[in-house]
Length: 626
Image 1 (cartoon, rainbow, N blue to C red):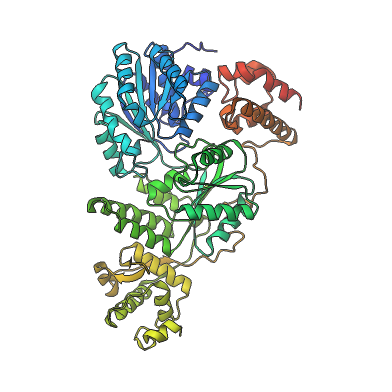
Image 2 (cartoon, rainbow, N blue to C red):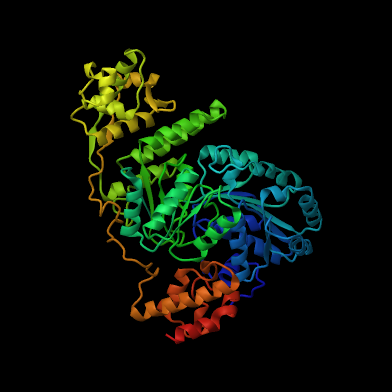
């Protein structure tokens, strides 16, 4: 075995982290940073971004370069990262508001001595006069190894998690120009990427862009039709007993949905900024450390969550843009095992997102950019072709349709029927125009559909709309189809929804549609049987209980269960999530191969030297006892 004092990246990867080879662009990024180069790394969630700075930090520390500073936006992420590094035998710490003064002072002494390898800090702490003075001292002594800026999209006004504290991080380049910097993010379109480079003064940095494809995630979007019941059916049919995240737009909807799911037998907890900090922390700990917890949350939850075995992410409301959608869905399947990204989507989602942009106090240029981003997400939701192709093309990546993919998207697995909605669109726009001609009246989608379908409602009689030339001209189109038409007309900007009652109004761009110059080919409302509508391509609905990541026989399953029980005890003793001790994939490899010695155990992926020393004999005991 290579000496633990080696500065070789591959030796560090094996001895510390227990892996035999880098993935994708990791090796190039690591070499570039060790040699002192700046870099911007775009790598999908679960792609191994952390190793891109952790390995160089260890290598440079062993070469006498001192401590690496990691800028992280979340306390939970700091705790997990530091816990995992300490388990691997790396001296790491964090400085945040959870520490008492004596603890903070102890860590500062460790940092100033050069003994620490990595220190995690929030951006607002990094730029305080006290911290900068300490960094100045370290820099003068040559003990400032590198800066890693995680979740770098937070620096961009175009990013989906903008944080003002990140704007001050350009001082790192001004103050310590010879200290290498690495900025990392899981999502960034061209606009966000350019903004990160400008704001962090990374114009000379090398840009590494990995594939954005997450081949183990299956994407599906369903039309809202009692979204709660649709969600429950999705969980019961495919993810009974699995860990998952359900995103809702409002705090009230989070609370209501979590309560309802709990009443339906799902182990669900709420999470949003309106909850007491102690409650949020307790719920997050339950999600990270227990199996089968479903977290119902606003977007306040998730950034930096490292839990590898999240089997699904569900959206009950439309996100703001594709970056948000990609980042949030990317929290599923970080272990590379099959996972689902499921979203329920309806007309109200389009109306609400448009209104939030229009009513924002932001500058018009920013609003235009946000509308463009929303339009791209709406196109993804409405498309009748491959969702994976659409998603990847947004990030400038070409991909073949996933029809033959093991985890094909819903459109590829069950191609939707389409219909030419051009005439229907013209009828809808004409009817809205007739409303306006009739004393400047404006109405919402429900009344419009009633008039188009010729329904004799009380409201139709009240306003005399049975006498309009457009009354009943769309009787052959179902209500579900009309909702799709209106949703698409709003998504494409031909209609807008105004005011408290969401009344519909024509936009100037509606003229070419009215004149028949624009063709609208839309998907038919789903007719897939409810039981099978969400089942993963080629896979039957799964029974309760998460299967192991590798195929195991009956004895292997018994060994896997025994190892998981042992791991749970260790995790409780160390106050860590179980996956920080060992991932399921590592336990499954042990259960399958049944190593009989420490040397054989050292060949299992995910077992570094420190973990072999700390747990090796216990693992052999557990394996031998089954």
